[in-house]
Amino acid sequence: MQFLNKLLRRSPKDPYWDRFINGKPSDPLNETSEAYRTADAGNVYPVKAEIPGPPRMAHDLAELAVFMGATALAVAPTNAAALLAFDGKSDGTGDLPFTLMIAVPAEADPEKSPGIGGQHARRVSAMVNHSVASYIRELGYQAIVCPVGVDPTAAAALARPTKSFVGDAVLTDLPVALGPQEV
Image (cartoon, rainbow, N blue to C red; front, side, top):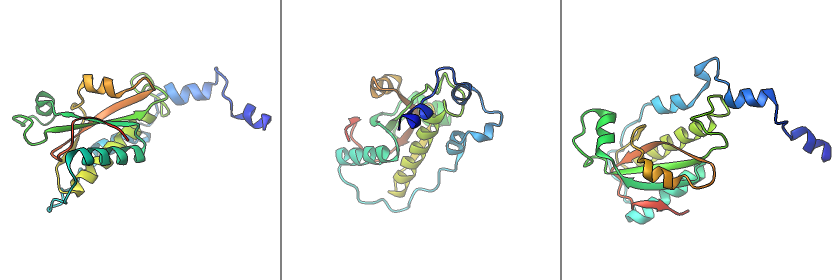
């Protein structure tokens, strides 16, 4: 067992690990988060499903996000300026009044670590956001993944002292309760 522990321990000067976290990939197609971000959103189911009340719906979405790899979910009102900057035609937040911010664990900060390993949190975030938005559309409500919809104040509160990353946001018209959701 001691041999196995020694074998699995990384040296602080491991050049392969440093390249994995900090080295940019030579082929940008090796990074899948962009594939999630540019994937077709899909259609909204034409018949709205019967859903529970807003507090329960927010809790259920938080459970789904945690099941997929997130650590927390918070709901905030949609920032009208962010929505206008994203699609260039919205006149306010009436269409998509709720913003879901989802935090995922991040061993390395994706903003500072461009390697495949350093971008792991960004990939998980993109996958969870894409899946939550797809689920909302299956319920018959609108949902888009928006790279500019994250409210920095709310995101900072969501990113707890543990290492976490808040990527894109899901904008939706699904009635959910505002605030951080406990799972």
